[in-house]
Image (tube, rainbow, N blue to C red; front, side, top):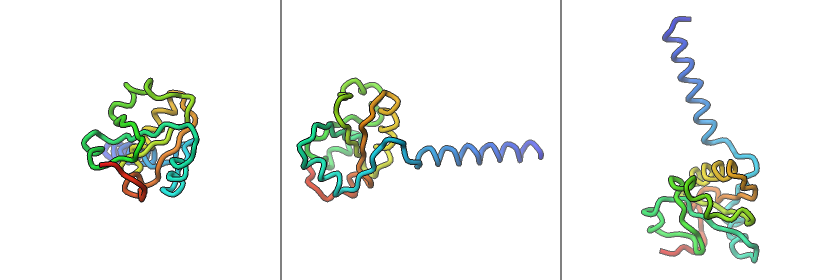
Length: 128
């Protein structure tokens, strides 16, 4: 193998790892359908609902009761989230909420769920 082949192989391995790490499911994260998510929100359980989209996106509409903590600020604001409550996350499509769950998992949050498909899949009430 020449130098170029080795470099290409390393680049491909890195790309595969990067894609896998972004799309792989997170152990301990509950993936909820919009119907399951709605059921939780209608229930009487004690939880925190976090919208991890950026403020400009939130202006387009958000789920009632949600707190906006953008993914880009989550590491700095993790102290605002109570660890004794179940945390429900959502974003636009479901990708950033998974990333947010990874961050929270690293900060010892154990009860985490997210909305599959994000707010794009949401059929419930939205405040604009």
